[in-house]
Length: 342
Image 1 (tube, rainbow, N blue to C red):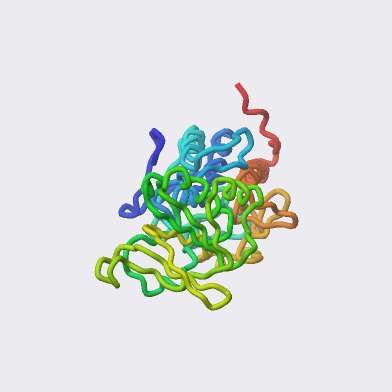
Image 2: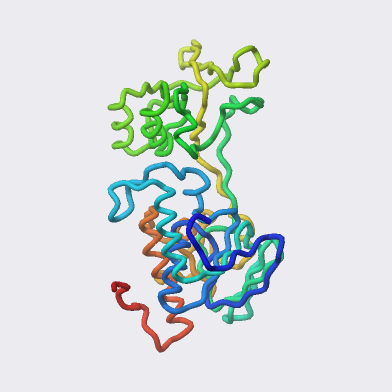
C-alpha cells in the first residue's frame, strides 16, 4: 500500500468473513475509482485483488511509464496516478483483500452475492463490481530466449534508473515498446528497437517521437540468440544475434533486453460464474450490469459494442456500475448521485 490508510488489510494467512454493501473485484485504476464512488454513496466497500499491491497492471508492469490519455493530465507517471487513485479510494475506508484471487461466486436467485477467495476468505455483498483481480496475466515469451537462464532479460520496466548507462535493446513494435524507448533514451547509454515487421502496432505519434529521439529501429529482423560475455560462462547478457529477411545475421551489443511482446491474459475462474462472456470478457448492458443481477463489470473486464479500451473510459464505467447497482439495491434512489464538488 502506498497511501496512508486506516482501513483493514486482510492477508492471505488470515482468512476472513466479511459483509459489505459492495465488493470490488480488482484493484486497478477502474477498481479504485469504483471503490471511491461506493464510498461517496455511503456504501461499505471491500476490494479483492490477486496481486499483493493495489494498482493492477500499472503497478505490476509499468509504474514509471508516462500515461498520456488521462483527462486533465497532459502526462502522468503510472505510480503517481495510482497514488492519487488510492488516496481517493481511501475516502471510502475499504477493507482490502490483497493477494487473494476471487475463486467462487455464489448467488441464490437474484439475491446478494458471495465471493470466496483462493485463500479461504468469504465476502458477502449486496452487489459486486468486477474490474479484474480474478485471473492473471503473463508476458508473451521471446522465442529466442526460451533456453536463456542468464540475467538481463525482462518483459517490463519498473525503474528507469536501472538502465542508466546501459546498452538497451527493446524487442517489439507496440505502444509499450515505443513508450519505454522514449522513456529510456535520455537515461541509457543507447537504446535500439528490434521488430520482426517493418510495420508497427504502436500509436503513430509514439513512433514519431522515438524516431525524433534518434533511436535506431531495426526492422524487419528477429532475435536469433541471446549471448553472454563468454559463451555462457558469466550468465550476464552482453549481445544479441539478429537474423534478417535476406538470411544474413548481425550482432548487437546489449546489456539489457526488454521483450515488449504483449501479455497473455488468463481470466481464471470467471468461466464458472454463469456470466455471459465474449473473448474472455464480461458482456454488459449500458448500466454495466452483467447477465446476472447484482453483478456488474467495468474497465478491462467489461465488453460491449463500441467499447474503447482506455483507462479513462474505465473510470466512467466504474461510476456507472456503482450508481446503477445503488439504484438496483435501493429502487427509490437515483442513478445520478449529485456532483461530488465541495
